[in-house]
Image (tube, rainbow, N blue to C red; front, side, top):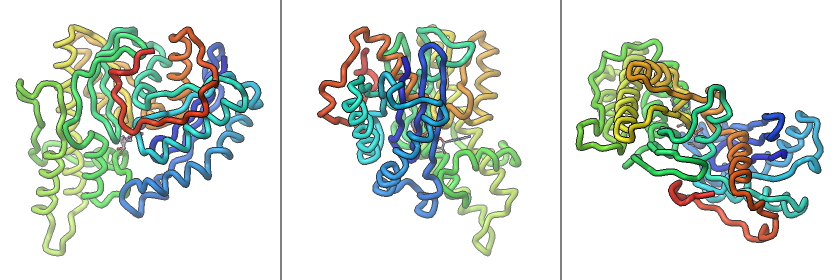
Length: 347
Ligand code: KG4
Ligand code: ZN
């Protein structure tokens, strides 16, 4: 079976085709980061309009790359939430119209489940049950995963998500949106012990929830204090702040992951979402997991950030797991879920 996946929940239009026999056939991605950079963040209306402009040419490009015709596609999976409502509606309308016209199933996929399940494509793959750390621009979550659609949320972010904190601190350091990867690159030149920063909610009573907004405020204060008389920061100071901030986030996340493994008694940890591309996080987590005899599974960095393959693959797994093959009947109703709990998914 060949599943076309369409991701359009935020500022990336990503399409891919997954074949249940032959694996990944082709992928295409358009990032809107240049479009939003001058505004310092995603402008929802511009995001929706750009998805409209890109989606059809991207589909043609994808089919060309895979040497396929639209008639060779057996189902269309699309991101139905969470995300920006207008951006989601572009992908959902396009996918459902296509499924209706071709009389094939349309499969609604939860964006964060896509991030999580794409890790199963990798070798070695984790096996259920495992703990999953989902860290993106909009979410920071720890879950217990017992099967496709069977998730228990162990911890969530109380305020800024980890990626959001990376982006806001990057902005304080003069980097353009989205600054997470650029901040990580800058941190490589800095000393992570240079600035003392808190590891939020790491006392025992902090449980498994996360809070990064206080940490971001500490960095804002530090930036103010370290600025010279001319109101600028020296390059070495910027690198030191970047490294110290990254280390504080990494330490905090690692601490919570260890606690989640301990409280569930599980020994496999899957990390996913844009921040899971962070090299320092991957390195420290791998070391710590080895120390306690646990295993960490990190998808390749290109599959951590938003992409169409995660939606195609999650769509296939859900379709396969549900046994009842949903037909495109009902495609007249186009629903998206800007907020959507992973605990309600089922199969
Ligand atoms: O999963 P994703 O592509 O989109 C959402 O679902 O939000 O994650 C994007 C987030 C952004 O905040 C971006 O700055 C962050 O992931 N990010 C990183 C790195 N690469 C992307 N953060 C830290 N280090 C990185 N290398
Ligand atoms: Zn994402």
